[in-house]
Amino acid sequence: MFKAKPPGTGEFCEICFWEDVPIEWRYVNKADYLGHLHFAQRNFAEFGACLAMYKGDVRKPSSADLRAENWKTIDEAFVDPERFALIDEIGMAFCDVERGDGVTLHEADVIDGYGTEKMRKAARLLDKESSWKGVPARDIQRYSWVLSFMDAKGFRYYVPAYMTWSLKSGLDSDSCQHAGFSIDQMYPDKRAAFSPRELQAMVRFLFFVNCFVQFRFDADQCAKKLKTRWAEFCDEEMIARFRIPF
Image 1 (cartoon, rainbow, N blue to C red):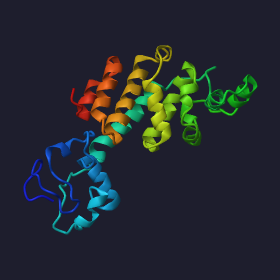
Image 2 (cartoon, one colour):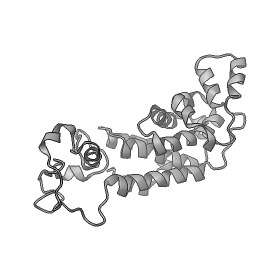
Image 3 (cartoon, rainbow, N blue to C red):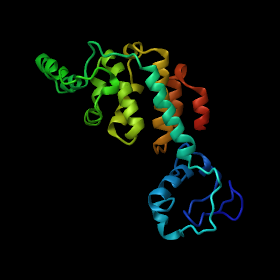
Image 4 (cartoon, one colour):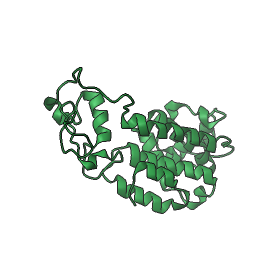
C-alpha cells in the first residue's frame, strides 16, 4: 500500500516491503536487482514479503487494504497467458511429427554411455509410445540430458515433448535447462530438419524460459544474443510483450 499513486512513488509497501521505483515495474528480469515486482509478488504469495530478509518488516493486510476489482499478479496477467499460448503453439507446430527411425530416448542414453549396437537395439524397445505427446513425464525428468545425443529425426520428435512438459510443470528442472541449451546450440544439419513454424516455436520457448520466467541477472544480454542467433525466427510482437530493449 502506498500513500501516493504508483508507479514511481519511491515508497515502501507496508504489507510486503516492496519499493516502488521505476526499475521495479519491469516484469522482465533486470540486471543486479533481486526484488522487482514480478518476483516480489511470487515471494509474497510464498512467505508474505517481497524478499525473505524483509519478513520482519511487514504487516498483515487489514480490511481497509482493498485491491482493484480486476487486479491480477504479473504471472496471472502476462506469464501464464504466454505460457498457455506457447504450449498450444508447440502442439500445433509439431502435431504431425513422427520418430520413424530416429534415435529414441533410451537409445540416446545408451549412446551417451558408449553402449554397443546390441544395447542400442534393446533400448529402442523401451520407447513404445506412438506420439511425442505420449512420452512419459518420468522419462523426461529422468533423462534430462539426452536430447544432445539424438540425431535430427529423434531430436525433432522429442523436443516438443520436453518443451511442453517444461512449460506445464518443469520450468525449474534440469530437463528444461538442457532442452533450451540443446535447441540454442543446434548444428545446422539439425536445424535444417525443422520447418520454419517449428523453429519459431522453439525460439519462442528460448525467449520464454531465458528472458521471461526464470530469474537471470543477465536476461537482457541473453535476449540480445538469442535475437542475434535466431533473428530469422524471432517473433517481434513477443519480444515487445517481454519489454526487452534492443
